[in-house]
Length: 230
Image (tube, rainbow, N blue to C red):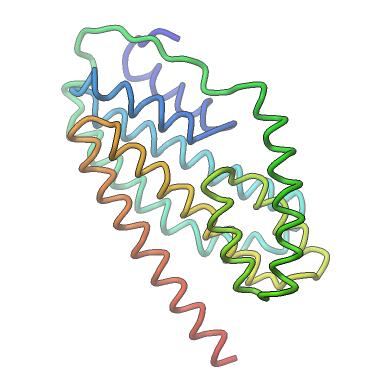
C-alpha cells in the first residue's frame, strides 16, 4: 500500500489492527525512523490499531461468555480512553507535518500463517492453564495470562472466557487475566517502538509504557484488596 496522506495510514492501522495490532506497531515504528516528521501520525495510527484490538477482545469475549463484558469493559475502557486522548492531542499538535511530501510502501500486516500459529498457541496455553490452575491456583492463571499476552492476545482471551463460562475459574479471575494479557501485549509493543521507532516515537511510547505499568499495578493492588476483604 502506498502512502497518500493521513487517511491511508489511519485506514491501514484500522484494518491492520483487526488481525494484528502488533504487526501494525512494528511496521509503523520502523517507518517512523525514515519519516520522522510523521511521528505524531504514526503514534496516533498505532494507538488506533490498539483500540481495534480492544474491541476485538470485547467481541471475542461476548461470543464466548457475555456475562464477562461489563467487568472487562470496566477494567479496560479507562485505559484505552486515556491513551486515545493522548494520541489525539499529539496528532493535532503535529498536524501541520502530516501532508508533507514523500512516499512509502506499507506492507500487509497480516500473514496466512497466523491461523496455524494461533491454533498452536491456543492448544499450548490450554494445556498449560489446566496445570497452573491445579498447582498454583489463580496466581498461575495470572502468570500465564501475562506471559501468553506477549505472543498472542486472542488465544488467551478465548480460553479464559471459555473457562469462566464453564465455571472452572471465576469471572473476576478471567477478567483480570485478560487485562494482564492485554497490558503485557501493549508493553511488548511499546518496547518495540522504543527500540526501533524515531526519537519522538521513543519518547511517546516511554510515556505509554510507564502509564501501562502504573495502571496495571494500581488495578492489581485494588483487586487484591477487594478479594482479601470479601
